[in-house]
Image (cartoon, rainbow, N blue to C red; front, side, top):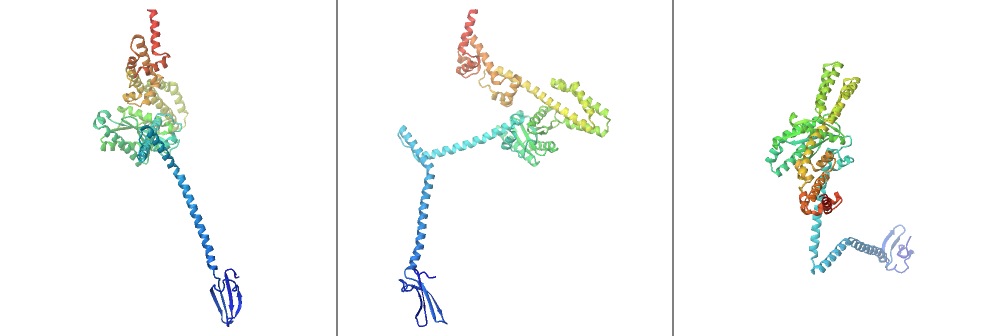
Length: 519
């Protein structure tokens, strides 16, 4: 119970005689420090204990040495860690400094003067910041270009393989899928050249167009609808509406938004607008049909009733006709006779426009439709059959009218190219500005109509004129190049050899050698 190395204990009676002595006879007990004393009155004993001299300091010293060792180890570890972290984080700075020194050595060898390091670092940082700002700006511009391209692809029905993913990434529309319903509205500024352009400066025009986009988006949000707006030409804006629940009132809601926008803009911005509303398109691939129908409405300005017109209003009128059939309780024979008369009248009015429509409304097809309607058991069944057939007919009609309206423009474009092929600035951009259509659309129309690219057609015209000048004149290649629209003779020679297979000089020599024997 008692450690003889550290402590001692003794028991004394009333007379001071030692009753029990534990380790008190060893070294250090006599001069040790007595810590505890206990008196037993009944026995008259006194118990005392304490620590021998020198052992308390030794025990405390042991404890102190442990803490000192821990502190020393901690400091050493901290120093090692600081050195490691410093060396690791200093490596990029060291690499930069090495490059600066290498650059200074090269400059010193070339110019003989040493540049200021701080000035060099400041210039590098400034260039880096400018580069990052330019990169961010180009990135934003790239997003805008991709967004505009996606919008045009949707309207033209092109590149729709991953359209849903692109819409989610680029468009402001949310919550869409492959079964979502869309509708396209085309808005047009009335009297654009005579009113809008003459009344406002270029900067004011851009501001008003931007304001119009914001007004449309705000009115759509107020009507709990989503829309995406883009200017498709200088005077036309296309609005793509999205509905995720295929509401039957979507067309009416769009009409109210368009009417409210037209009224607000006319009152506050003093701009007159017209809107053409396309039919509801079920799925992304049907957006093109909605856009074409809205465009068709805008091309019939003189036939529109008001500044907000719906495409496919024949459906509403046909609904009213069948409602009157049901209301008047007409017999089956009269209903079939009226439908037959309507189809025959439609054939006389529309079939003459094209062979496609003539085939659709042939007597054989009309009789087939009438037979299917007679087999229907209800009036609703008759209406469904007629609606399906007339919808297909309407799509053909829209396609034919669009082709006819563009055909004249494409022919005019072809004549313009034939007259201006010697103009070095003649390009798709030049044609788009001249005919107020996009360059991509101009290229598409040209290839569709003439089965060749615009560039190939232009090159063919220039090569024919080059051959004529090489054969009949002594003009130099440089002079001929300027006459056919090329900047220099080198470019003309390269193109001519690619097309004809021989150089212009060899062609001229061959033609003249062939001509001399005949003469």
